[in-house]
Amino acid sequence: MQLLMLGIVFLAASAPVPTVHSVSDISQQFTFYMDGRFHRQYLQDVGKDVRNWGSLSKLDLSNANLLILTGGDPRIPYDAGACQTIDAFLHGGGTVLMMADGARVPQPGAAVMQRYGAELPDIKPKRPFRGLDQLEGEEINFRRGRVLTLNEDWTPLIVDAKERPVLARRQVGAGHLLLGSRGLFGQKPDASDPINADWVQPLLVTAASTKAIDPKKKHRRTWVEHRREVGPLMVEYHDGTERFADAIVEVYHEVRPHLRHVTGVEPSPGMIKNMLILPTGGGGFSSGARIAIGAWWGKFPESRYPMVELISHEAGHSWVLPYAEPLWNEPIATYLGILVGRRLGMPEADETLKRQIAKARKLDPDLDAINPLEDGAPRDLIWGKTYHVFEELESQHGPGSMAKYFQAKRALLEPGRKGYSMDDCVAVWSVAAGEDLFPWFQSMAFDVRPERTDLGARVPNP
Image (cartoon, rainbow, N blue to C red; front, top):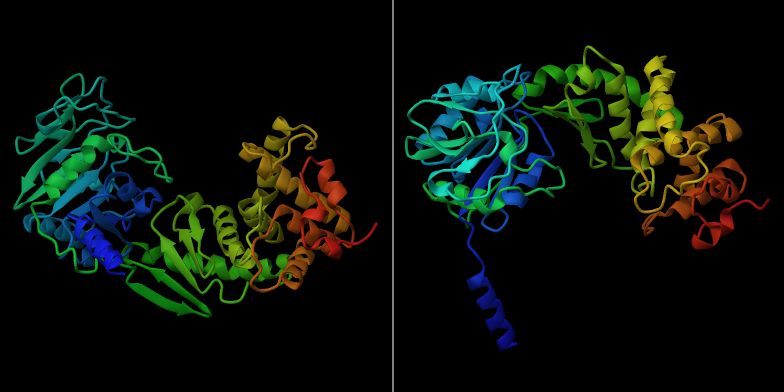
């Protein structure tokens, strides 16, 4: 026991103390990449990161030394309060990294950088790229982006073939401002592309060391500051997304009774209690109890069907859980949106359905050759064949085959069950249809067998 305790003490003493407390801002524009992925790629070994979900103007940076920003979206400009927060943080010794590029429609970050003598022109750089100062001799990977135009207060760190900077730094008060093209940094939501990590990490660590942090103090995220009850739903938003909230809530209330009709059941217990309005047009997500909706998805509010489909999709997960669908968890959620769109008389619903099935038929003309469960099955095949299956089930075992399925699933799957396989799923569909559907699924190349599920005994006999 004594040796074990000594080992624990040694490990605790030798564990690296974080030198960076970073805040990844997703209040100006939400991206999954900034929701923890940037930290995993560049700062995981040296610091802690939290996300700012609330208004930047209200952000507490007292125990942070690195603020990570993107150019943002024109629908939510950096307001005066946000600019004051950034400036005060810099003058107090903090480091700000702004990842932004020039564009035909300027990003809001461009106006922020103008205050510090930097312009973001819509000019593409020329390869190759070369590191200067502390980055001299470093290998530079660059995806598409734009050059920077800087005054004499800036020190270029990377230039293109025409000596135009794409990354630079300057001192502001006691802190450091880093401005770089977005193309110098990873972008994939799964954080599988840590380009330039060999020099990005030490660059950020060195700059952030200007401001001391207390690593013993909890480094806390900042949540959206506005919450209000709308019936049984708690709607969450910050200053920038407030103007979108009412219209999105209106769509949700329009969609919900139709979801209840097409599924034949209420959402799973404890689900869909909160709805978060995200500053993005890039979609949303669901944790079951909370759904998050991109404020201007599909050019909302000018276009309405994409928002109907998105809300139905994200809310649909609250009907599917706690047993997520094994193959078509995402396709079934969108299919629920298609069904809702049909009930609302929206022609885009059937157009979406037909377009996806057509994509699948290009890969598998009769939809009976490719097993969608095999590794590497194309996404278009999985989605299109899923829609085809649901449409055929409705045609052969309807009306309301989807509602029968959800009702059977709720009745058959007991609380605490571990896992839900495609074999289980087909068994549930068989109970819902009152017919053994394993041969039918097998005829479409699904690798499913009743003997591999504990629900096999519930499958109706021929």
